Image (cartoon, rainbow, N blue to C red; front, side):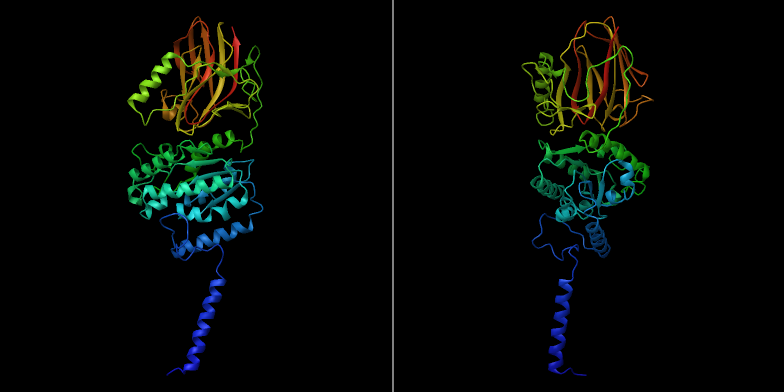
Length: 447
């Protein structure tokens, strides 16, 4: 049947009215229909399942925004979302907010950053993003470019807001995420944030890879998503970093043993400082730089001794007293060789006791009147990789007994060095190189 012109005009007007009504009724949390005018580059997923998930989660978050104000926000994709309600249990005593959306990309995070995260006035951000960009054939250069915009937006909001950037986790080529591309993304991430004191990079790639660059099946059953054991491992790696940023509460009652005295008071760096850099170290730094100009660690040279009495942290921010710990912070340059020593010299025999905790692959050391005992994340960074009692990402007891110029060094009761030669006198020190190291309960008893 032929429709009269007057009716046709009515139907056309009605259809345009419905379209305009539908447009005005679109949820403010829906995915934009086109990329026009949006920041960043690359894919914004618009699959039906993703549209529904994106809008549903963001709408729900808007309703809880006031309750989530001031939280530590975990931001990312399905790996973050998958933490679910267990996120709070992993970090007791602190308000957390999960802002992960399964399937999200770096560009998606950039678009929703203001409403979903910054509007909460967060106390900190834990960011893991990038793997889904690879699945959509995004290039490492593009992914890093979007991360740059994300970090610039955070800095524009608050340049003091701490950001823990987790490296993209390993996966598998069968998931369209080959290891060489993931490693290139992470390398670009590290170069991007070099010198950025606001961002701490957590080495989560090597932490989770199986030695060949792929995900560990026991932690990633589908070679992409974590299981319960995987989340526990991630939480263990994050907890020291968040505590060091004073985002997690700390309660550590401890009774000092008879005859011991504290070398570190727990609340400032009184009694500690920088010694003049030795000629041996100056030569080592120069040799390393000459051999590897791009990869050599920063190695600041100290020309005059300096004490940090009364300071909560060293002027460069590398060493800090935080909640009873002497924290050696992650350097913004990824690797940076620095040494903090007691201003006091020790010539008598003694027993030195302390506890240490290392982030994944952290590299540090304890100086005993000069010589260094390697103190690291032993399970991953060595050199004492076969210790049976070492507690990865947990607290470990270190005991060093010096008698007649020889040091016997134990970790949780296991021998590290049975006959380490040390000079007749000298200071006690700790080193910073890679990752975060924490020392606490640093105490000494002269014999």
